[in-house]
Length: 341
Image (tube, rainbow, N blue to C red; front, side, top):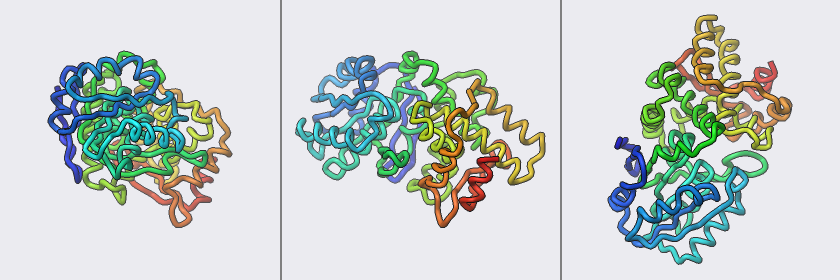
């Protein structure tokens, strides 16, 4: 078992282990109430809910199940969860535990942060993407047709419990999705190396990625400064995701976004061929599909509407090299010109 301390305004730990055998003891350390609402989707309910319910024997456990997929990260699903929590008579001293990937964590966390103005919140991520990204840092959100994550809160969990056995149930698409974020961390901090990416030791990759994210988040919990670095590849990646009708996974779109950022950075900073090739080699250490097959003009429109746009400009995280990210705000017209080129 690995314990990673997250020194946020409300400190907590991310636990990396195998199996759910330690779940009761870890929950019991941070939660003294009686009732736990476990939020699942159709997949995680089938695969893991029985084991989690058995592990939490001694608590009153209720289940709130939602449809699997990005479409559940919506106002409608959020309202359904709140209604289910109220019907289950959850009180302020009770707990919401999200058992699933990023969608379940985001919409379930948003519900936990707003139900009765906030109840105890525990994350049990079940995908590689959620393990290294959405489970740590306290961001919760839902999507709108106009864009991703347009409504949300900052709400730190009391515990993140990562069971790496869950990764064995994932299809290749979901592994690719998580690797998109892991490679992002490799560009932000050389702690995750090209060799780590090639070796695919998931426990090592998860541990190193969480430590990098925790370090950044705890310097800028409410996303006013350095935390923006975590958006590397995301401005373009989110636009691709929306333009594809969410048919492409988040992490795959982030990888495509980083590929574009390498080209934009090379042009913007006049980087040497050696620097560019080093970055391209790191990105290609994992076999991502980096082609962009959706409407590029629609992507351009979404880039201009990105929620990080400010004062007529769009904030990009550019790269002067591996481990050297820098935030640059480009005028909207320049951002679109760079993208089209």
